[in-house]
Image (cartoon, rainbow, N blue to C red; front, top):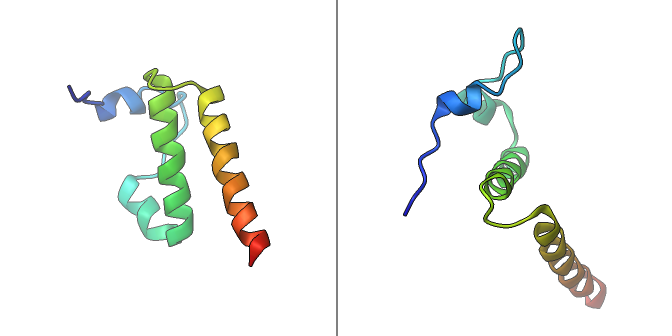
Length: 76
């Protein structure tokens, strides 16, 4: 079953007196690489907050992936 996240919930997390850039504006201003990184960060944050996995599990998977990539780079 899919979980619906309301925008109001996210906006309610913004401290009083602070503002957050509009999604469309952010996508226009960020490079492709920056937008990709922001997307991955946001997705992982939501998955951790919703309990799909822990930060420790994410770090472990990240380390495994990084090690594989570095090993490939080294063998070139």
